[in-house]
Length: 69
Image 1 (cartoon, rainbow, N blue to C red):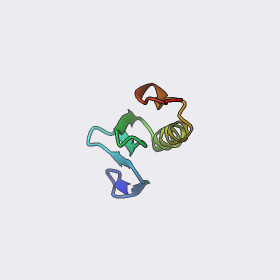
Image 2 (image 1 turned 90 degrees about the horizontal axis):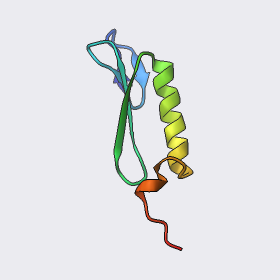
Image 3 (image 1 turned 90 degrees about the vertical axis):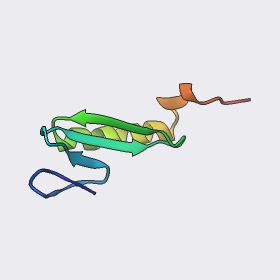
Image 4 (image 1 turned 180 degrees about the vertical axis):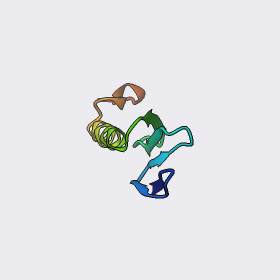
């Protein structure tokens, strides 16, 4: 778990950079790492939750995969 500049836990996959922005990242089903920067921790948590859901349901990342059938 990442920490902010004051030493507090931010949550899994989230940490605070020295410039004050929060970095959130996760690895999708294909093994590709996705990272994005935010002003607040709740924004970062929401992005991780939304993109993990989209990855699980193949809404956003489907253009990178071939679905035969």
